[in-house]
Image (cartoon, rainbow, N blue to C red):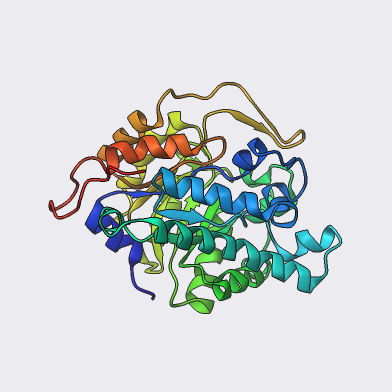
Length: 330
């Protein structure tokens, strides 16, 4: 397996900051993403906006940029009229945008500023098969493929992301236990030198969307050395305390948490309703860390401001052995 960079970051800094939502930030900058490709539409129409959002999150304090490939895949682009070659180029382009943003940001820092934070990583986002269906299935898990079919669907884009230079994979919003098994097996056989985190899509604080018990799903991966962290994403912040407690009981791996704002998504209209369920992401995220989460960020409808609030406690306090400088910049 590749070097355990996530574990090294946690050992030195105690908490690793993820980024937040990409799609809703792109929307704020003027792109209509009410489309089957969702945020992946920006790779075609407005790639500069993707890089701009990545930079916004790095400046806010994020240690990891997640590529804008959650809903991007070759078949999806081809359905919209692009050739196979074009589709492969678009997948690669999404990684290059994240790497360019990372390099531009890192170059802008002083030597002292670089000592105060880990060197940022680029995580290749691999959304579930349900995201490709573009019908909200990532929140229901109501689809079923064989292990081999899941692997066949994911393999081509994983190869493209790896070849483009991602540091780790992010298997995210996975509602289907068999799909997570397929991804872990594929990682070990086709990408043995690369690690990944798995974050599940959950129906409640005890079950994946397909009905599998969360503790069963999480504990399954304890013996998979390539899986560097286990957790949940794109669920309500109100579920997070109980989820962390449940995960701590069954896994020794770092716990990764990045919920949405608590609003409700309608896959038909591709819009959000209700109000966010928190006032300050920094306040509640600090409790998640105290309770056992090591990788913390946000998902849909969260913002660079939310990540900055996490940074304010995660980097402005002396964490670890006292050798790290406090983050007082940006």
